[in-house]
Image 1: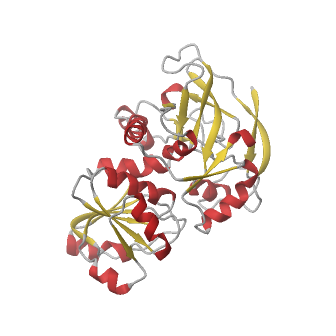
Image 2: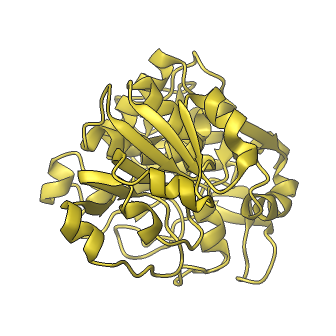
Image 3: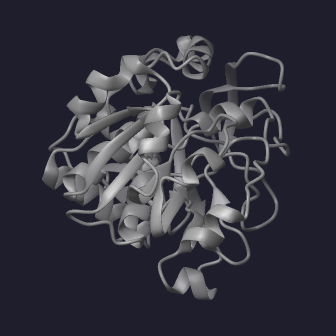
Length: 347
């Protein structure tokens, strides 16, 4: 066992604080990674505060990880010591169900193992995440990171990037498609960048007029204020796709009527409370409401390579680890442009 330093939540109502724990030694198929940067995702907050239920304490969040390989097991062929690598939202799966066999490990039929607060495949331990100095991961779930881009700006691609890239690819969003992006936060700003890079006509749908200039800078051709009833009425039957990135409670019904017939609204934000929806927007327009998780390992690597090729990264504010509790409050207040990233050298 290797003792690593970390920050952990000890209870739902307690701030994160320094913590130490034992990481397993790398096995034959494992890669040990010294973590250089770790992004701060809204899911970290939900988990630390038990807003989705089921948090096991102490909880070490963090699943937007970039770092350097420090040790490899005897069977590891994909990586060597010194390589720049990433670890995303999950670190294991059964590897033999139909989804795993189709590069959809995120939808493992027996349940994938998330990077933190998740039962390991051996059903013996709970995973502890990237707010820590090192992590040990089976080589299949480790990703190659290009050195072309600043690593602190790459870290959020491991969640915010793939969470938005995967549905854009799955539903075949292409040049000329009209897509509305709901919410300009950590996920939303990546959705705008990626959809615009694919040639889609992007409209930012936001409750905050102050985000209009940023939306344009990120690649949105249009900005529409969702609090303006006249504007929302004018947008009826406008979009082929809507990508909803908001994790706070909100009304999906406000947006369904903005879809064209056969339009698709994709949910990637995860509010902690259920949202009732009316049947009529679906029936009257043959519209669909769907959800999407992150991508599988193959698709995540594809996304990382795509971003390296197109010079796409997240807009970040780098923080010290002792600022994490303040960062949580600022994230909830929308006071970040657009992702906090922890410099793990400050641990």
